Length: 346
Image 1: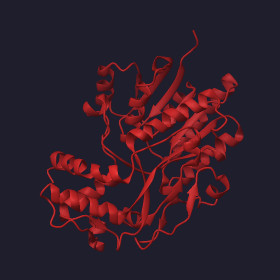
Image 2: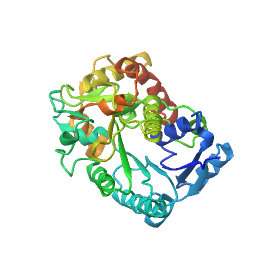
Image 3: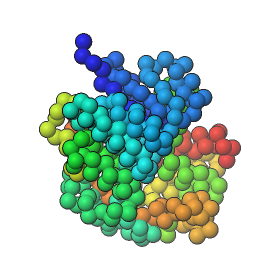
Image 4: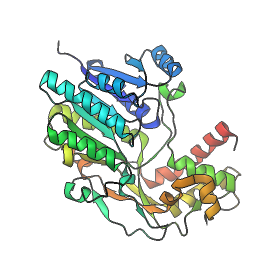
């Protein structure tokens, strides 16, 4: 019997990480996977063990350099979802994977979760006319500023691939939407909600109306949470099967995008949902004041007026075919609002 493929997954108690773990446990070959979770909370680690999912749980943090290096040195695959801006964690994982390569002679796999925020163009909600980044165009991606969000970590990981001791694959989720489902979420181990949409819905509940920067003409891409986890599973398949369409290193970027939305469309969708729930004063959105931007979003306010334009050429080349777009995202807002009202008493 062939040995199991060992996978170290970080961030399993998060929205994306929990969804990926749920998806991998549903794979037909799940019994051939030796999945190891690095979990900070001893309480959540115990809850995961009680679910009897067939995974190994290690209590600790991805920010613990020595631990991360040690764990990475023992696996075939690192699948990182915990913090796409933690360069120390990425470097620790790379050191461990290099040891793995030196011990086995085979380059291990590093699947990193980055984000399409790296493409953000600050336009203050004025227009949608920003450069469109194609994940299959490595030369274009390399024109990004080295100080762009998430870029320092991405570059460190790609450099490891260039040295030959690891094969790197970077997945870039966009605005992820939808309420995640499964035992991890029902047991309150993993977070079932995204960040961007609930931030905006929460602001709408407080002000009784959806909000946007200036006229809200800026656009962002979107992806549904379960279709995002499908991409990770399909990418893993493509890597393991030697699919010639799957690229790695400087060419190994995989944008997780399907449809686009403008901030005005999102704000109007929030306003309409609030009216249905008896919490809105109008179905029309309005512009945030500067004070509201600071109140609701802190230093991240300008990002809600930015453009993010990109294509998922590499992702679709391996067979990923998402189907849930703007219409479905807007329909989900009501349920996000209901969840926030129930959880936070807004």
